[in-house]
Length: 342
Image 1 (spheres, rainbow, N blue to C red):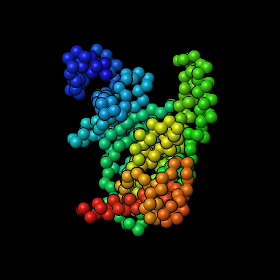
Image 2 (cartoon, rainbow, N blue to C red):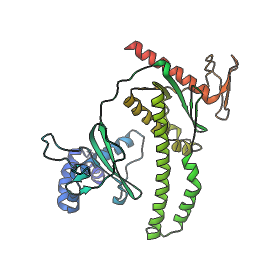
Image 3 (cartoon, rainbow, N blue to C red):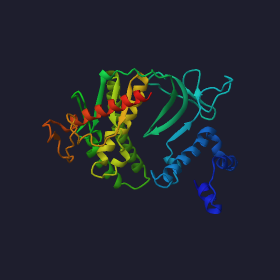
Image 4 (cartoon, rainbow, N blue to C red):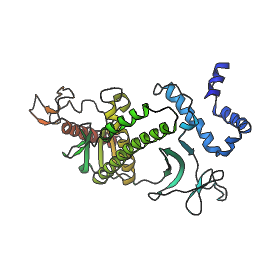
């Protein structure tokens, strides 16, 4: 990052990936400890820097900041296994006994919680609290979608209830962060009383990290089970294409929206639909809560009003259930348009 900034200040030129690779060769001679790290993960940092700059230039993120080595919690190997000749290994591969292997690091013992399906394309070693995780990115052949319009469902996600389906099924919002909020506040207060970088300070930081990790794991488990259930039950799933980044700017609900994990839920639905042969249809969220699902009449209402009462046809429905019916209708209309165009 400093090299990139320095070159731009000197001659207003961008520091390219080729420039960074050349500089890394020089740095390895100057700083021998860099040779202890596999070369591919070192080069992958260039891609992270590019993404950080792209995010800043697009207005999505702030200007990139230097990260201390102790805050660097992951190592990415963009290739895995053996090269095409079958003899030479990439930076990371499996040893004969099933453990991970790297020339510099040696064998790394791992415990697979499920079988890996497909061809491994990338490996990320990630540290969370005191634990390390191996995250594999794989390429596989997905099941071709089998579209059955009769087995379609509309889903309205929310904060009061997590998901309301167009068949009146309701999944409650578990609010995992709220459950641990009191405990988190207490641990944060205890942290503020300790001397920074002392042994007790570091122990308290670990306690906070463990609590956050537990909340994240509970949320992930809930979303995995819910998304699996839905993709097994329904052939076509229609959801709103929500702009979550924009929604979290509202300070009143930002914490609740982040805790709900709508973005992660949408990603899980997408890849599980592709895996099991279903279809995920994302629709424009505009007026799904305002329009009457029976006659289409628009009934303006604030978030505090939880019942839809149509002034034209007299339909009375739960607000979220009414929205799920509109989402289903929009999804099927979009699906029909796509089929007609093809």
